[in-house]
Each structure stands twice: as C-alpha cells, then as structure tokens.
Amino acid sequence: MNAVRQAFRDQADACAALGSPLMQRLMAGLAERLSIGAPVADQVLGWPGDPSSSADSVPLRLAGGLHALVLTGQDPALAEAYAYPDADPTDTALAAIRRHPAFLLQWLKSPPQTNEVRRSTPLIAAAHWLTAHFGLPLVLSELGASAGLNLLWDHYALNVERQTFGADNPILTLAPGWTGPLPPTAPPAIIDRRGVDLNPLDPVADRLRLLAYLWPDQPDRISRTRAALDLAERLRPPVDRSDAADWLETRLQTRSDRALHLVFHTVAWQYFPPTTQARALAAMDRAGKDRPLARLAMEADGNGRGAALSLSLWPGGETIPLGRADFHGRWVDWQAP
Image (cartoon, rainbow, N blue to C red; front, side, top):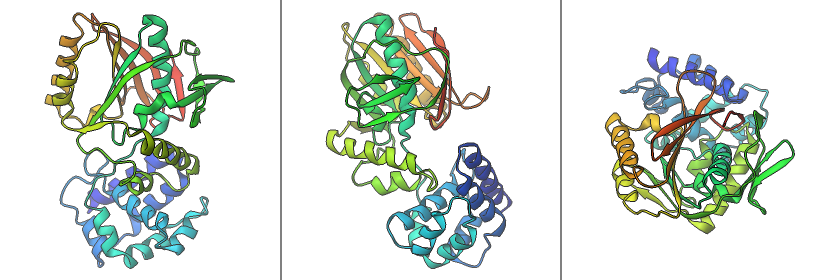
C-alpha cells in the first residue's frame, strides 16, 4: 500500500513539472485520502505489481478512467470540478470512484497509452536538417507509434520566431518555446511511412482512450490531439502490431539508394526490453553499411531536464547531439550543428 501511495505522490510531482496543477492536486489528494472499503480503492491500494510510472502506472490508469467519465458525460459533478483548474477535485473524484466501480475497474486493467502530438516538433526540425544535408526524400519508420499521429508530422507546421516550417496548409501548428538556432528551411519530402507498436491504437475505435489519458486542465493539448485524430481517421497511417526489433529487421530489408530511411522513436525506447533494443541497433548497423540511414531519438537520459535529442547517421553510425526537449514538446533547446 505504501508503494501505491508513493506512486501517486511521484505522479503528482510529474504533473506539476509538466504543467498540470489540477492533476497535481488530484494525485496528491488521492495519495493521502484514498482508503480501502470500496472495489476501485481496494484494487488500487492492493495492486499486486509495481504501481510506479516505470511499470504499471496505476495512478495514470485511474486518472484516465476518471477523465473518461467526464468525456463521456457520465459524471457531471466531476466534469464541473475539472472545469476549475485552480480548485482541488479530490473530494469529487473520491465520490466518482464510489459511484462508478464497474467502469473504473475496466480502465484499471489496461496501461495508459498516449500519442503526444507536440513530440512532432523535433521531428519536423530534424527532417529539415536532414533534407538540407542530404537532399534526399525520406522513408519514415516509427518505433512505438501508438495511433500513428506523429507519422503525420508533415501535415503539421512548426512556428518558431515568426518563421514557419512544415506544411503549407497545416491542420495544426506547433509553437513551442524555442532556444538555439533555427532549423534549415529545406522542405522535406516523404515517399513512404509506416510504424510499429506492440499495441497499436485505432484513431476511431480508441479515440476516447487517447483523449482520456490527457489531462483535463490542458485544453490546448486535447484540441491538438483531436485535430490529429481527425486527420488520422482520414489518412490511416499504417501501424503494425509487432515487436519493434522483429518489425525493423524486416522493414530495413527493403532498400532504396535514392531515399534516406529515417527511423525514429519518441519516449518509447525505455519501454523496449534490452534484447529488443540490441537487435534494433544491430539491424540499423547492418542496413546502414552501404546506404543512407538515420535514427532520431527523443528519450530520457537522466542528464538534464526533459529528453535528450540525438541523431545517428549511417554509413558510419556517427551520433550527433541535437539538444533537449520537453517530454510533451512544450519547449525545445535546439543545438544541431
């Protein structure tokens, strides 16, 4: 039980750092006040595995279920509490937990899964950099693609210091806090795109799931995701269900000397087993011996705020630091050469 309460406290700190004061108060409140004696609380507090964010993410499972109650109109009282981001919704959330046991127990069965659209910010910048340096069209392969929303980054625009990069008629515009030089203006061209995920989500069937794990006091984040889901419903970016290494080994067997194959992953690598990581790296080393290949990573490294941005290039396998970015893409410190 102590581990569960600590998981809620840790999630409260994470929510505060990522700009969600409402969820910070809710997670902190549940850490102290959730008590046994009702089905959902008993399941949460008696969690048999690791409840932390590095494993089962129990606080986010419950938070997603509560937000789903609001999004589906099943709990007007909770919706009203969530409408006031400066308030503490803990009392109302505890009452909702008692009112909706069957619904919330279902949400506790599945781990949270998001598709953060603002992570396309470094993808757009890196694609412009690669196009300027290599002058080749791109083949995209995303590892941990979820619903494929970030496979569609060429339909988004990046606005930095009154300069726009990306689509001419974007369905959404990303405007992060930006430090460092601007990306090159060379517009990228994409000739093929595909992703992989152990549990790919469908932009229609899983729309509620993708929205519920966003935080209710971040309406801009929700509106961006809705716009991207609408686009994905029309374009259907292909995301295969597979182990990342199995899939990448096969994907890289198709070669093109007239294109640059860009493999990318954003806050996904840490969830791959070590054997999958090793096999994926080996597959890129083999494929990049005699053709242009790049790997863009946006991943936690424990060496500073946010995620590290790095770009590995083949032939040769040289890795270039590109800077750092907020895990949700709110800011980018771009340091590409």
